[in-house]
Image 1: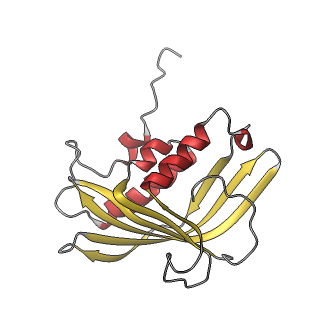
Image 2: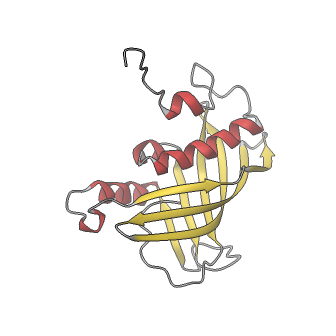
Image 3: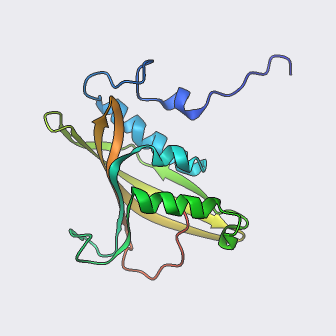
Length: 183
């Protein structure tokens, strides 16, 4: 065991930035794809504060209730949370009095390779689309969801950030129990 070495953290393995922490000019398609994969891994590893830091200050996490829904404000959504609400949810998940999280829920993302749907360097907007399966489990209960995630990304202070994460469940109009974590 004298030869054992620590495993590099996910940032060292999947960081999409150069050594100074800056995006090299506009992000490449591979940097956008790696960013989406890293984001899912942060959720799976319960590194929710780091995950939250991936959002812009005006970032939104949206899970529509209706198939093809275009308006999150005039139509009900399963989730439509700004950074403040995301912060509150994360604090609740960490809380000692959150009895619905004893033991804590765990999750696992299985992603298809993200596809880059839009590159608008002039307006600093990059959009990816990712088909995925998501499993959430607690005790003997395990829920499987199939979904598509659309990330609208931007570069802020030289780093990729999420302006909007939209998660469209395949069966969005079904009756759901509590979705505890983030897809």
